[in-house]
Amino acid sequence: MNYLILGANAAGLSAAMRIIKADKQARITVLEKGTVVSFGACGIPYYVGGEFDDIETMTSKPLEELLELGIDIRLQHSATALDPQTKQVTALNSLTNQSISLSYDKLLIAVGAAPQQLAIPGIGLAHSMHSKADALALRALLPQVQKVVIIGGGFIGVEAAEALIGQGKQLTLIEYAPRILARTFDAEITAHLENALQRHGVDLQLHQQVCEITGTQGRVTAVATEVASYPADLVIAATGFKPNTAFLADSGIRLSREGAILINDQCQTSLADVYAAGDCATVPHRISGDEYIPLATTANKLGRIAGEVMSGKASRFIGTLGSSGIRAFDMEAGRTGITEQQARDRGLNYATVFIQDMNRTDYIPGQTPLWVKLIVDKSSRRLLGGQLCGSYGGGAVHRVDALAVAIYSGLTVDELGYMDFVYAPPFARTWDALNIAGNVAK
View 1 (cartoon, rainbow, N blue to C red):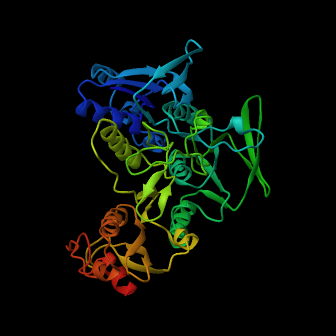
View 2 (view 1 turned 120 degrees about the vertical axis):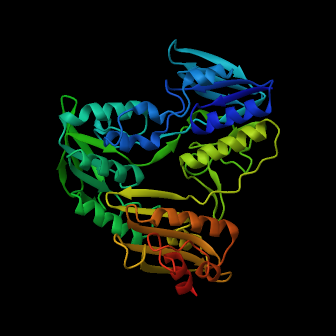
């Protein structure tokens, strides 16, 4: 069987490893547009912030090991067209500037996503936090800059703010929405994270639209919004991602409104023998159907599913909940399932509960508050989503894992109220915060 994989990171290489295990006669060719494979970009803010110094630790499997397994990996090859009728992919070799055509029996599209670029004057002066090259460039620039402006208050923007404040920079974060992380958390949670940013010196400018980035002789000098101008020696644009699917325009493949490839629970696309996974594709959501959620965890899992299905195993993805977490200085927050905003947008018959409790017993030092929000189906009483926030290291994010299992299992808030969570004075109270939230929901 001739397998062609586009993309040599989380999804693509996870698929390749499963194919090798299942099909000993597999011929696997992987095209990668860049020069780096198997790179975990999630660690970039922590590398830039100086929490570790060896960037190679962010590579899970070196190129040499992959080649030894018999995978034909071709770097600096970008797919430019797909012809599903002849089962061929056209690609450009950026080294030679020559176009090649490759045939396939089974094709996996795992080309990822690129940072979304604002259509404003001067955007070329901004940096991204997306690739290994970005990380190295930012580390090299830091000694030369003092005033940093971050555009975008999502995960990368918040993580970058923490990293650069830790490097002693003067930092402004500009967000178009009225609050940070608005697509991920509800307002009760983001209020605590915004407070953490401001307490640690971030100049948080919300509900402002960036109009222009100005500079002279190739160096940035300021970022202008419709409200004010903010001096800057360095600008980081963190305004979301766009799936790398432009080359599929004439292929007939079905795409979402974001331009992501629509797939089912076996990573199959609308084209025969064509599969997709990772940040270029949607993901089946346990509650809300097809969603575009570019997360590394999902990319790895769907890549594994794709590889198994392509090589003949009847695997199916159980569905994501979009579980994720973030640290913002001395605070942490996590979420799973759907938010209240998502429940409202979908017209669901839902109720919410928001409580404050404590992370451990009163007489143990280090007791800190936990805030818990639950989204509940009014009719069935089942959990639809949950969010927690608390002091960093206080257990808020890891409690989200319990909520994820509860949602997958179809548990009700009544059952959550009596769930047998671990009790020991250093870790929890006799009634854990999740028990309290479940009981309040009754």
